[in-house]
Length: 198
Image (cartoon, rainbow, N blue to C red; front, side, top):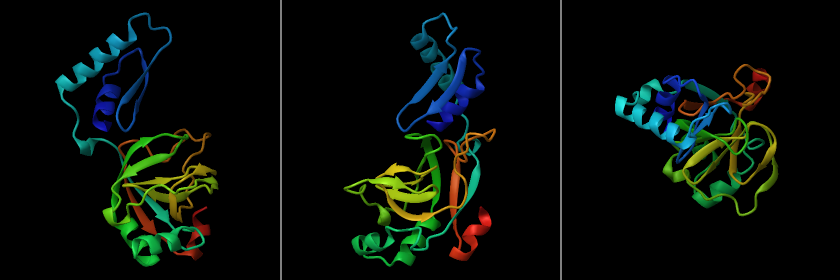
């Protein structure tokens, strides 16, 4: 979906204001002044892009390194996950940080990235009871994906660590740290270094 989104974006249609890839689809936001038939125009644009050929997956996204502290203070579900998965917390952290992740989409909340690439040994269902508040920067897992909570919001994923990076800031030129298609590596950092990143 990210390759198609890039192709549509690069087609430079004067009427398309935004291209938003999701897990199973692509949203094209047309200018309200467009007087044509939006579904037909969208279908024509997408079909043309597919026929002309999609960019390679290497052309989509950036390589982004995200520091994460897997200390039990921040990875407050590590003990429960350790019991469920029969893995020590350190091994859960090691496996999580060893993966290369791909941002599939940004959604649910502004700046909230959903990433594929989770080690199959760490795949757990969402928590039975979501938390009312998950702290900003929390790195969490569920099913075969990982996410980073962009700010304090509710959530039902198991938290394994926290990044000191500001994942979303509406006042930056690019508010979201991560975009669909980005390739993400998590770099473990010790607890004593966490504050140095702020």
